Image (cartoon, rainbow, N blue to C red; front, side, top):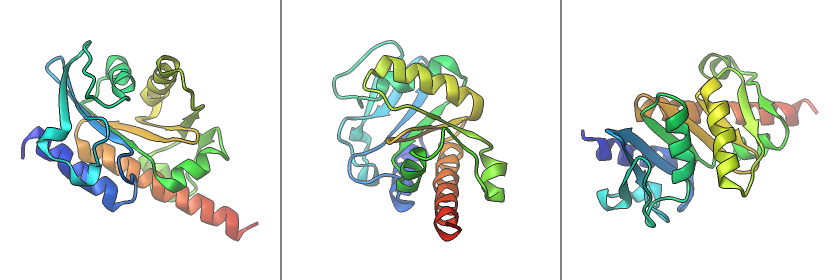
Length: 180
């Protein structure tokens, strides 16, 4: 399976796990001083090769996802090959409750550890620096009220982090409701 096919499969899995809806979220890969990223408005559940834009590492393309700056800043900060950005509902809900998400379930603690939550900002340069700084500590970070970014050496590694995060947030949220 080639790189773009791997990313297409990841997009479908992100939809299957309810981590994105419609044109929310994005996916990228970093290879040979290029970033391959989903285009603006791409529906991750029905991606095709035409939904990806290849950009020189320090370049831009008006078709590329608005999150290109964030992905580039992460790639500049840490050595990773793939970044996935999700909008899992439970992750977003829990982001309003904590500054650092500490899973209460064993799987979440094992896979994720403590997950930093950064303030959502409209200043994309500042937001990208905050995300990159925190993702270097845990390979996954949550943006308050917005969603999560995860990285990995293969796309399934990043996907596993996002799936585990949203599941752990659901467990945390349900536990809070049931013990209130």
